[in-house]
Length: 136
Image: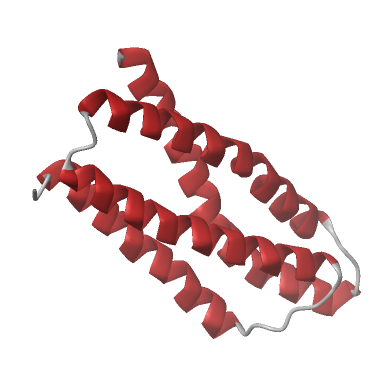
């Protein structure tokens, strides 16, 4: 079970990198697009980071469910899974922003993207609290 935990933590770290970085990178991508009206290296990197981290998110989910099953799905795990579902919705919304950005459509403001990015931080803090405190 130790290796499953290690893989889970490693993949969560990789997925979180994308969750935190991609909305911020879209801001820079938008600025780059305004200057050249084409996808430059920032856009390519943002797209690749999002795509790569999707696999890490799937592995994190699978190993997380395995660990939850091994623990017998205590109540705090259900809270964690609910919060992870919120984070997954956030990730899908980020993906939609990335797809639009690849077409040159930047409909969201910098301020929206910054707030959108901070929402994920709050959800992650709640997940960490549920895992560490195990409130029930």
